[in-house]
Structures are given as structure tokens and as C-alpha cells.
Length: 175
Image (tube, rainbow, N blue to C red; front, side, top):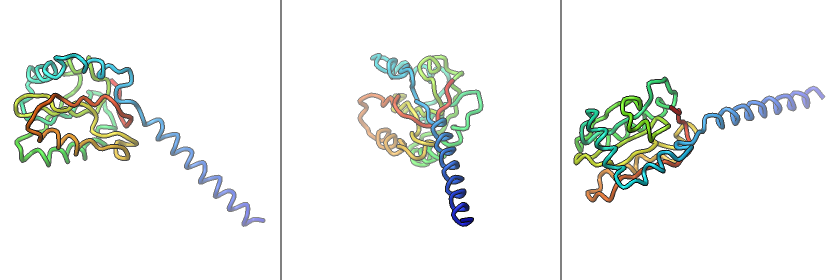
């Protein structure tokens, strides 16, 4: 009887631990653009050029991989660092450089972006190539990693317009 009670206690303990982990992980998931602010703004015909111009006016050079965060501490920024390093390692040979930018520094960005960490890629001709999250999913590592897609799109010579990724759930901090 004591052996059966021990197994039941062990099973109950394991179930409680799993339930706690599930609850905690669900709290960590949030929408990148929950009110559709970025999605709506990106439908404007001049959105790509307006964002590129705002970045240029704030001293961001062409051929930049821009990591957008907030001035507040955000744990999710640490989860985005491996994605940022992987992207820079691939594009550095093409002359791209990494730039850190706080959302509060560029009012035009703050008005359309509500979540960080985010990635913006500006090519060498000062065209917006990508704006959105680095990845989605629990901890931004179990879902879709967009680094490969961004690399492929950035290296494409033709420019049909920017990819604006306003969709996805992951570890995001809201401004």
C-alpha cells in the first residue's frame, strides 16, 4: 500500500509541475501586433519609404540590421540575440552592420510598432526589406525562425517591396 501511495504522490507532483509550466508558458506568449496597428499602417502605399526615411533622419546608415527594443528592460531581448547574431554573421560579408535602436528614439516607429524585440532590415539602397519579429513561438525558439526567410529576401536583387510581418505569437514586450 505504501508503494502505491508513493507512486500516486509522484504522479500528482509531476502533474502539478507540468500544469505550472504550461500556465507559465501561456503567460509568456503574446501577439506581436495585437490591435493590428502595424498591419493597418503597412497598407499605406508610402509605408516602406516613410519608415526608411524616418530611420535615415535618425542617423541609421544603409545596409543595416536594426534590432529594435525599448528603453525598458525586456527579457525577450535576450532570446532574440542568437537570431540577431545569425543574421549578422550571414549579412556582414555583404557589408551589413548591426544597429541597436530604442523604439522611443524614433516616433514614427513607436506610432506603428507596439511590440519588441523587432527586426528591421534596410538594404544598401536604403530600401526597407523587412520589419517584424525575429521569430515566433514559446521563447521565440519553438516556432518559426524568420532569419532564413529574411536572408533570402534581403539577398534578392529585385525589390518588390518590404515584408511587413505583423503576425505571430511569441515572447514580446509591449511598449
